[in-house]
Every structure is written in structure tokens, then in C-alpha cells.
Amino acid sequence: MKKIIIYGVAILAVVFIVMQFFQPEKPVVAVTGDHLFEQVQVSEDIQAMLKTSCLDCHSDQTRYLWYHYIMPVGWMVNNHITEGKADLNLSEWGKMEVLDQMSILDEMCEEVESGHMPLKSYLLIHRDARLSEEQKTLLCEWTKKLSEELLLKMK
Ligand code: HEC
Image (cartoon, rainbow, N blue to C red; front, side):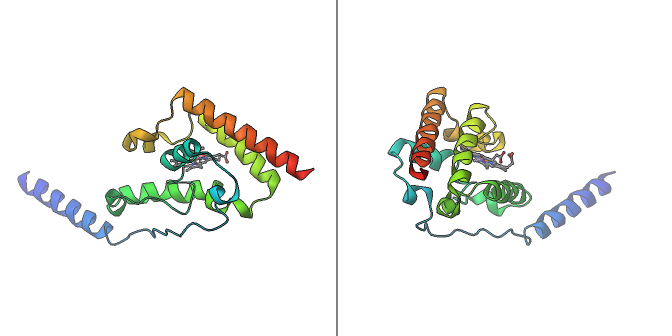
């Protein structure tokens, strides 16, 4: 019995070590003129809110932390980042059609109000990313206002 446990632990240790060799890519790109904050005037508090709660998964400027280098945690986090960016990359705001920008703004408010975003697993580690009701209201006021401005510009 003792032997089985020792073998078991040894196999797990080897698997764990081998996993570390399969590191996902961690691309971080400098902010370009296409970034949301470069494209439109965004107030300090909204910028701070987006930076703390959204941009790790929805921009090319993810803040990578030590546990991103430890598999399998790194794989799970990487999944969220790539899926999040595929749906919405605020670093590429300038490349989107105005109508898409407007529907994204609408979704941003919806996702936050429904409590779907930021992802729960993210909030477990990033306590400061939790948005208060007041912050959610501020964010939605901002998305609506920007959306209206974009609409006016189209005409
Ligand atoms: C830990 C990573 C992570 C964080 C942080 C995060 N998101 Fe997401 N987001 C995702 C992933 C993954 C998806 C795609 C899958 C899904 O909808 O669950 C997504 C999808 C979205 C979508 C698109 C939904 C759709 O139906 O296409 C919007 C809009 C969005 N997020 C807004 C936000 C906002 C606003 C914040 C900050 C308040 C935020 N997200 C924070 C990972 C994240």
C-alpha cells in the first residue's frame, strides 16, 4: 500500500513537471492608436475601472502574474484571455465598425449588470476587480453616452 502511494506521488510529480514545459504564449503588445483610450476621451474613473476589471482579458495589455507560469492554472487562465480577446479586444477599438462599437458598448453594460463579467474565477483572485452597484451604474451611463455620441457622429 505504501509503495503504491509513493509511486502515485512520483507519477504526479513527473506529470506536473512535464506540464511546465508547455507554456502558452503570453503576448503583450504596446498600446497603439487603435486602443479605446486613444480613440475616445474616457474619464479617469472609467479608465481605472476598465483597467482593473476588464482589460486583462479584453486587451493586448494583459498583466501576467506568477501563477500564469504554473500549469495547469496557466492554461485555464490563458483560455479565458484568448476567448475574451476573441470576443472583445479594446486595444483594437479603432479597427471596429461604428455599429459594432455601439453594440459592444451595449453588451458591456449588459454583461456587467447581469454579473456575468468580470468572470467569477477572476474575481476570486482579483478582489479589487469586483464592481459595486454604483460602479456598474457609472459604467452603464458611460456606455450609453458614448454610444449616443457615436450615433450622432454617423449622421
Ligand atoms: C478573466 C477574464 C475576463 C475578464 C476579467 C472580463 N471578461 Fe469579458 N469575457 C471573457 C470571456 C472568456 C468571454 C467570452 C465567453 C463568455 O461570454 O463567457 C467574455 C465576453 C465578454 C463580452 C462579449 C459577450 C458576448 O456575448 O459576445 C463582453 C461585452 C465582455 N466580456 C465584457 C467585459 C467587461 C465589461 C469586463 C469588465 C467589467 C469583462 N468583460 C471582464 C473574459 C473576461
